[in-house]
Amino acid sequence: MNRSVFRKDIRPFVLWFVWLIALTLTIDYLLHYTQILWIERYLGIFGTLLIVFSFAYSLRKKKIITFGKPKTFLRMHEYLAWTGSLMVLVHGGIHFNSILPWLAIIAMLVAVISGLVGKYVLKKSMNTLSAKKEEFTGAGLTDEEIEKKIFWDSTAVKAMRKWRSIHKPITLIFGISAALHIITIFLFWRWN
Ligand code: HEM
View 1 (spheres, rainbow, N blue to C red):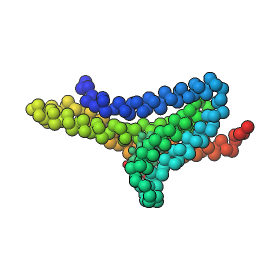
View 2 (cartoon, protein in one colour):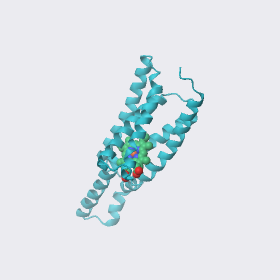
View 3 (cartoon, rainbow, N blue to C red):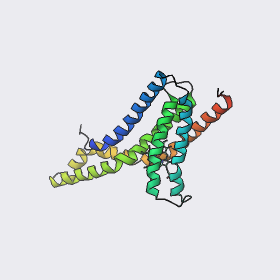
């Protein structure tokens, strides 16, 4: 099978994702080790707040907020949502008690993954793909040969171009399941 031409392009995406999971496991381990697990509850609240603040980007895009550069708000969205997701992941911990919060966590992870694809991978991969096409054309390959050579890469790029159509709708599923989880907690949970 044709080896991917844009292995290098996915490196920052993989690093940010692996970093997210590694930090989650490390913090979770440290909280267990030092027996200050109660912090996990509050990380859930802070993480959710960071993710909610990160939506200031949507308000800026829809011109409900008129100050500041949209690009700055987008950067803020990316870092706040990533950090908030880290806190929510630690909050979720490695325990499975009920389905609803896990649905929220899975939806959140899908949002993070698609966001990272949109930010780090897509543009670079598209550039690499067209550079490869040019190179093969320069080497005298026919269109059909080029299509064959880059089949898997162009299929991957086509799939990645859909990141936006995943990133936004999954937020709704994340929002609803997280809200239901929060309501249930406030109804049934004792804070002491
Ligand atoms: C909890 C996780 C996340 C949620 C729920 C979320 C949700 C959203 C939503 C709803 C939008 C659309 C804004 C609008 O058009 O009004 C958006 C845009 C965007 N997000 Fe995220 N996001 C998350 C994490 C991330 C992460 C970690 C990154 C990248 C590091 C990221 C990158 C982006 C980018 C690049 C856009 C811009 C899309 C555009 O305007 O064309 N997101 N996000």
